Length: 399
Image (cartoon, rainbow, N blue to C red; front, side):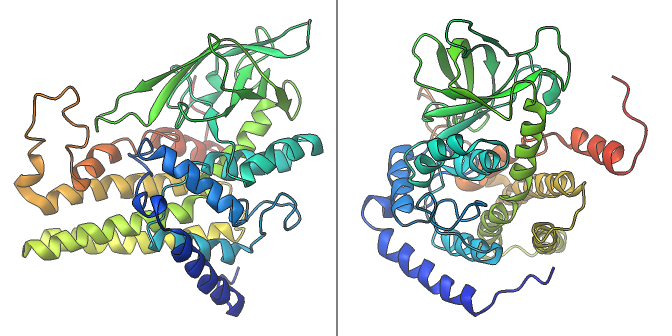
């Protein structure tokens, strides 16, 4: 694919830049830079209001495979979506709280849902009014998602599923209105069989409990969610076909957001480079590491563009995860290496209940949070197994 920006894209760039500058004022201006990996918990109320502002502007759902404006959104080309993402990142607009609904659930409903489901759920996402979280991982089923043990039993009285079990590492669960849940609906089924994709309202006191998980950074952007007879509103893709729907969604998770993610990575790298310049250090090994980090980010960008253009490479999602996970972890290591011994000093106030909360600087938080990059979202070991077995045709791992 010849991925280039034309005159229409440049017109869109000017329009997007003007719109963002006009609307990123007042409380939204104070929310600039808030949110994102490692700080999803910051400024949620202001970011929810900003989500509604984006909805009024028609900026949510640009890539949905539906007619332009069908749900109040403007439809943009692939290059147009990249232009918007670049301008959004350049102005440090608030981290999105609606990205799970917009980029994961909505395209899944377009691909596997009914017309009634699309008409019910997509407008709320497009307006920025309904937030979603993802109920996939469990304590015994993280990277190996087929090990799901959360169950859902259909109630003969009303035909709805009652869910019992636990999900973990659930981003924004405390703030979400809905959760899409992968649960086992066929008793005695194993692995990929007998799973169903369910849509679950989160406002069910006594049936759903959300507990924040405190991380190495001292923050709690992830949560564990306990279901005790929680009622699902409906299923997507039919009962027992949850694995097909879940895998379709994961392909979106790996592909759609990769390029946008790299824009944030570039901003982080710029900060590390600026810190190195300001330090006046003259270490040739450190310089070589910084140059390599820059070159690898450029390579990842072109690989992402190639993939978004439709390369047909079945291993592309796993390769992308391996690339960015390792790259970001090394960036965290570089951030503290540039700072030197000063980076090892923690907050001076040790008497607080949460000594790390707001006590770490950006480089320290980047280092600590990025330790998990090669684990969450599918560990490096799992990604290599996928490439070996599904792409290269090597013998399957003994389980």
